[in-house]
Image (cartoon, rainbow over all chains, first blue to last red):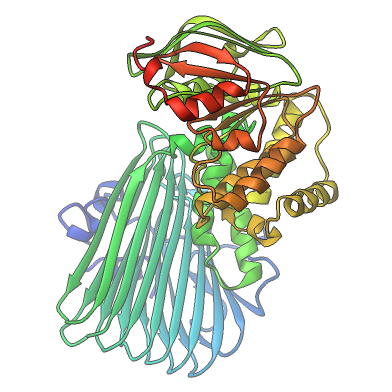
Length: 345
Length: 248
């Protein structure tokens, strides 16, 4: 099956999701991709280092959807990098990856979306499964060119007693969407779904998560932080469903975004749907500018406006980045977000 | 040092300072006392350049240089320091990072070399010890989760680290118990020197038992309505501010 037919397959007979699809209301794929683009040709593996260079025990590289090895990764106690490279112009491709973390194992998945070329359409589909008592920390960097359209969707299935932690760092593209579905069985399993998005120019990113708690005593926490300048647009859609019978669920969601310009836009839709009893759930959402009082405080200590702004913005983002457990990956993410923020100011 | 002449300022279109005149020579500590709403905090914000505090007349100079024409950070680099009545919490920025960024920004503005990390840490450790502060507190987000007293101590820590020439203490005694008040006052007194001047803004006389002023001024209705020696503070403690209530 070539990339084109697989892409068409994903689109359910060729209809791209758009505004009429509630979950794509703010990320209208059908308006941007009027037709299914021709399939991207094979390309050489990248000559540049990825954002997690040197941190992984092994690396899987997908170039324009093509991968040399198997598309199933069975993870034990290890750090694995999955690099989704797009090196294409006006073409489209689909990459698929299945990840299984063995029962009791503790793994780290370092996932990067790296783009060369322009106006490509990259569609990435992941299937992630955690065994009983397994842990997975998934750290994602979306670093793509202005003209790219990129959609990544993951289905994540947790087992009882498993721990899933995710941090997504996105710099946007023409349209970029990162979507995560978590099937949460409860039973002491925990999920953390954090995100940082840093957008300039006319970039667009969409962070969408859906967590469905299906059993007793599950825990979910979420912290998303956005910084949006230029005429860029950030979308955050976080939905947590606590199904009937999923009692004693603990779910906390927070999204905060900073707007750096008048034309910047953030659309946020935090949702809690609760059908169970005796749950502890909360969500919070703010969109605004940097605190004027904090800015004055820093300036009164001698920091010029640009220095004070950079320091406070970095701190704003650090709240989410600091939750990354893998130390070296956290440092890599700090570096990446720091460079993106410099580009923003 | 500081010279304020016929200063008028308003907040949100409402006149607060109405012709304030004040001189604080180098080496002296002056106290400003007054009833609530007299304009004490407005004076501290006008001198440090906070947005929303609009000067509509008069002058304020530091060693002859027009303070009012400078940005807040430029004033800080010239040596002006305000110890805030309500210090801000800055999550995600450790106190050490905050102070080091401030010191080096000021040094850069003055055309001086940056303070190197070892020198900075040595100074920070010594300063924290003199203020009886736990050094580990300085590694946490600035003022996050600190008590009122700890925040005030952190202000004095920053003041000592930045080594300013003109110090404004805005209600530094509020929220302090007697032990904290002593430590903070010792920190302030340690900075008294012939080259420095201080403006101590307070509602109560208590602080002035520990930081002895050379002069006391009464601010009421946006103007200095009385000036005298330390005995004026004691007199106010007894008689209150009533007689100055309608001084505007």
